[in-house]
Length: 471
Image (cartoon, rainbow, N blue to C red; front, side, top):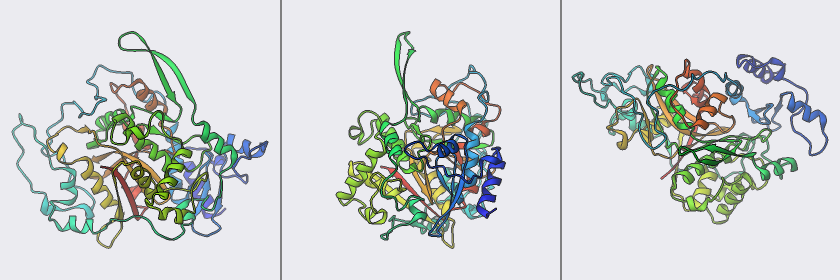
């Protein structure tokens, strides 16, 4: 058994998945017509590993149709287990003050926060000189504790902040022809299989149903199988219920979770663009008129990126990729930025890399904390705050996600809260989101949140990160 196969077997076992699903001699790529062996392999959830001919990386074929980068294997198998957590995890709705699904903060009476921020944070983030102790205020007063950026970086003149931002690169991308380590296992593909092209054209299943509205009238509701609206308020409620969370900040609840379809493969970059577009549509932000109706399909997004290159926007991407139209080549931050700029949507891309002074993931976390906890939230003392900010496009080697929030835990660690397009929200979360309610309790909020948290243990495996933010 190779190292890759052994690691895959252990990852599946640790995630509670049957060991026999981890390894197989059969491939998981269906033929356009009548390949019963391949189709049966998909149905049985079999997977196989494929060493890269270029020697750049190991890619593992998962039953979901995705070839997963070796560094992502543990997290990938664990997230599949999270998709199937128990349906009865949240309790029945309770008579409790609900989290507003509008742009607002959580309205739960917070505890005194004068000493609520732990300074037990990683050594590289400590800056004791900049965090001045202060006396606790009288019990009848409530005041805002230090912001996340003050804890992590100190004041703007601090040496820590200067060293951190020396690790920020203003430009993203290279000029050479990229290979499998950047473009994925289909880096040299000329055209995707016909069955996949047809599936992307048709899109996810759409269901139309009638529900009773608040005034008693019937309301026509359209549900798209791979889209989940109203998930941000549910996650915010779980952050509030989690006693290990000190503070949490979330983006606008207008963003929808969008996930891959079965056997789709690695289109995570496009799915994250769709999530950004869902916010633009629902919040009626700049550029909303460029995306009427439903979310643009992956094929449409490919056309839009190619058109952006035609206009000279991040056009080096065409040389790097060799063109992406009708292929499964991975895209990244430059392509997402090119698409947005070509539709006159202002945005800013920033890269973070590891240096001798600071880890790239720490600098990136600092930037995310500053984004959510800025001057607009400086007077807010609630444990969980839902803002009106757009989500963030987030990229590291081999994968991209959408950041919808950030949590600081009592032990000083920090979690990104993400929508990962590779995975569907679990049934309990989808049920709560579709019911559009936050009046619930959960015995184990950490269990429900696990699939949406990316902590320092996950992030420290990578040396470079990219963020794309709407202005």
